[in-house]
Length: 527
Image 1 (spheres, rainbow, N blue to C red):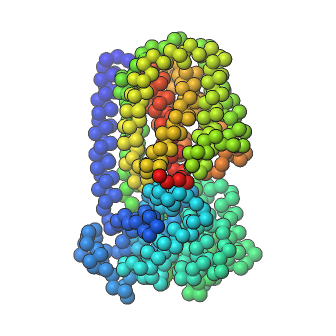
Image 2 (cartoon, one colour):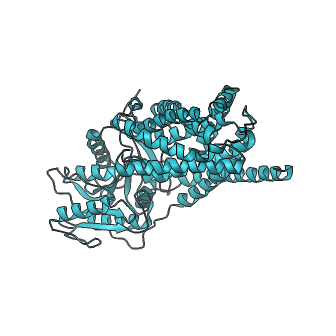
Image 3 (cartoon, helix red, strand yellow):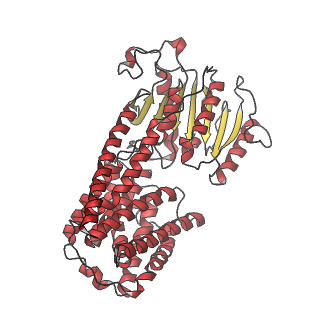
């Protein structure tokens, strides 16, 4: 690359970095703006965020002294509890929470145990206790009407919502988003809606139709057609939300509108104007993400400048078959990982199986690399490995800081337990990425990036196949994994262009994938 081109890239990178910081500032202002909200801790150490209903009863729309001006009992609006899904947390439901709060509902979003900031160990059998504590908080709040409390749950949270609604006759309405399969309580849930995504797995539309017809007491239902009566508490409906999937449905305006309309009917809320379903954070977060992606190559380049290794041998002819070797190792590793996940000690539901699988594949790839004659290259990486790994850790620190600013998808900062899990997981999968880099990252920057992309495509294909045949446990989001891999690929291309330092790249890759797993999967222990 010529000096002029290099200077141009540096200038463009500086502009992108400045724009990134500016958009982060805007996102922070939007996050702290209305609707008024605050983080609270419920009994049982349950982290939650409470979004205040309408501002007409307080001096200002975001007044910090709102509790000094509680809403008179006769004017208190309904309250809504939001319950996230298996790999989610309350941050992921913040858009829906804000939309409901903007339209006059007091909304409480919680982190179930083992999720987000909740450090209590995950247990399916104890989720009902978390829901009960949240409902008790709402009923005691001076901001909402204790006799008009509704529940919304997504995926696993939908199951928890339906389960609780079948045990509490005081729940005015409940909405299950792509889930809700447990109905063994003594009560018939009042005013129940099942919504699902058009691009969801086939199981969820079938589940919605089956559960809705069961609650309605009819043989079958027609999606989009309400049954029963709101006043009597017998209203039931199954509704498909178009052009969304299992995850994006929780940020869908159509879904929010349907939920709001349902609750208005169940809670006897009269609306004189169209609902406000805005959330300016979404557009800003997208811009932040695009800028962050644009900065991955420059970040890798800068990191590579601190690497220890500058040159590598010419590529072997067999290198072009390396992506197939990666795929073969991943396929071969599935049976032992499925039978007995050796990384169970990580105490991450689903995550321990994923890490076990990649770790076993890593061992197989090291053997394959030695058999194919890559052993000499691997040994050459030992020179300056400590310096390279240190540069990789520093680069990952920058990645962590950049990704930690997302306030619409998921909690991005780690609890102490998740930090420990991330470090242990990264150690286990480091051999996979070292072998991956030695076998695929060869030749020019363009050629090596194409080969690495083929190797990552093999990883995604194997993941999808494993989920389809049940060799990998349900709960791994291939879409989120693909986004993470795309950013890893850009970083690796930049680092390789600067230094050919494969230890640095492998260190960042293992830490980044481990972070992806540690952030999202339910955790079952606490220090």
